Length: 203
Image (cartoon, rainbow, N blue to C red; front, side, top):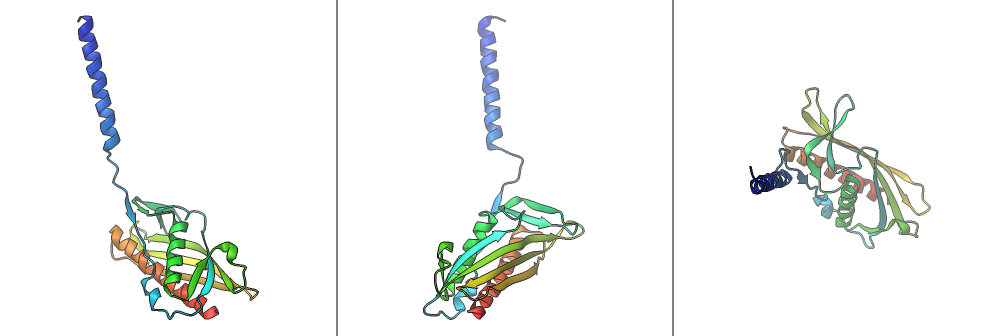
């Protein structure tokens, strides 16, 4: 084989390797990642607006393990897992803070202010920690329901702080992701409604 043929074979080999590498970048055996959205509590608009609305600073945190965009599972043996190809649209603290802010504002009873303004006269601070936000797994590894739990406090001026907490669960009918997310939506709606009612009662 002469030099020219060797060069041609060498160049063709490199081209084929390059094409194969590019194909590997655009194709994958891994399932596509689907992102899922939760909506603010729509019935919040049915609350009777007040004038002037109460100014509330909102602080939303999560316990270790929940600070992620993964949709998490929890087994009966306390093993934390996740749905491989599903994500929330944002990390959980940011997603939940946005949901609660928009739901509180939709009532017409509250105006959201920055945490730095919480200490001003007439303003309140709602600190809420999400302690559970899981899909429960049964003994066979199937999803049986979802669970959300919160614990926090409401501080308005110099008045004594009051405890604000909720714990709800919702069953799921089957393993489809849209059914599981719908259960999360129902559970989050219940937590939001419960939180709004408790804040309103303490005013």
